[in-house]
Length: 355
Image (tube, rainbow, N blue to C red):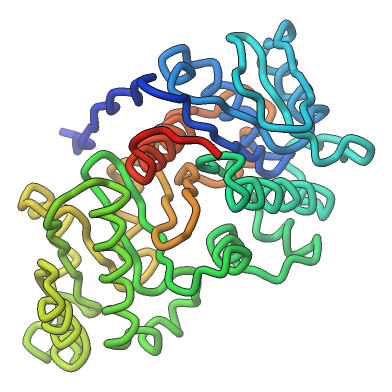
């Protein structure tokens, strides 16, 4: 009998009470599925009343993808400012490439594609920083393409943190009540152990705790902390990091008033302990947290950056060059990213006040 994958019910879309949340949505790499999942998400009638979206990227790129999808009647309006309202069936685009939009080459990794995708991110960050939008949602980029374009950064998260001056951030994957944070992010596996320090763990716990209380409106959240080694070190037989580093970090967090439990064996946590009342779990490294998360929630998981002065989310998948331009991309994760961005923005600004 095949293994049955757990399912998660889509959360109710944000209500349209108060002022619509202004959301900047970047198109991502023009040669990937980013524009496609953006278009499919904006075609969701349940989502639109809660927000005023403005797409950041290229109107030409968006039109190419729209035509492939059969959205030939879609009205694309190039704007200079974030509109107060976007009528149904229309898309507002703040075009960052009016005179130099690159051709769309589905599946190709190009410096022009990387350059365009990052110009959109830069613009969206600036809109957030200037309070012209309440949140930003980023479609997938190619790390290879942005490197070719001259951007010496590992990805979105690090670039946005640097541009906003945020020194203490962490990637948090979100799917309903499942939230997974990371101590080390985009670093080679051989360097992970060096990054597991008491200071790093305590910093991430503080960031996650603050995000849970402020951005997700959870009172007195409980965070589970995974071990680094198999079976959480098995009493020191399989490694000493749990006793020497992770447990003292947990004790320090408890001393600051946080509810933290661990170190927990990573191999069994996602199978047996997801229903034990944890509001988030802190994994030690990228694949330890993201492999089980994506296995459980790939089609609607959200990458949320905790610790930023602005609200930023993205879908939990990449550019998927292999299916770009074929109309096959599922929009669930992008739609969830928009929903989480709207919800977090409203928790930060419950009265819906605009600048």
